[in-house]
Length: 188
Image 1 (cartoon, rainbow, N blue to C red):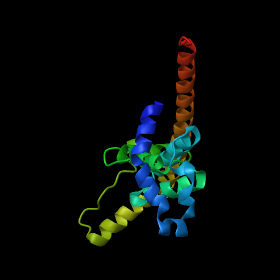
Image 2: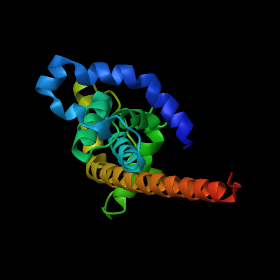
Image 3: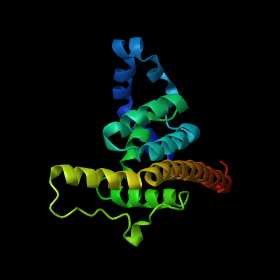
Image 4: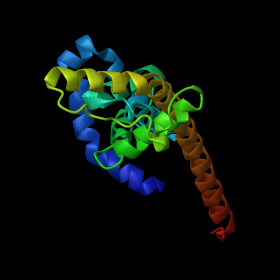
């Protein structure tokens, strides 16, 4: 990522960051938020933030941002980038990602029904009331449960590892290109 763009973004949000870290309540109850790696973009904190964000993005519901905050504190990753990275899951992408996670998890459960076989499809019993519908839905969820749970953890771990490696390699390639460009420049 070009350094001037990063610096421009950092300079733009620096007053907000100073307000957050300078707040008396934050200093008193959450002194870990004053950690510089949480707010500055560098090679290590950026790669960690992408990994944390990709991992926490598959957590269901509104807990993604809270998990990204905790993960950023634990791994000293860039906090805003980790939270923004969780947005790869949205109403358009969550269903395909969960289907992929189910298929990934079902590789480790040989007796689990494949989604394409139709065995794992939800079938509403005819003439069932609310109780029958809830029982059928609960049974269907428990049938999907173990492969989906394992698949979510495995997919989140895989995405985090690939994201971390991609940022590290991309940052390194950018640095090498900048070094070569500087070496080709004529000296004054």
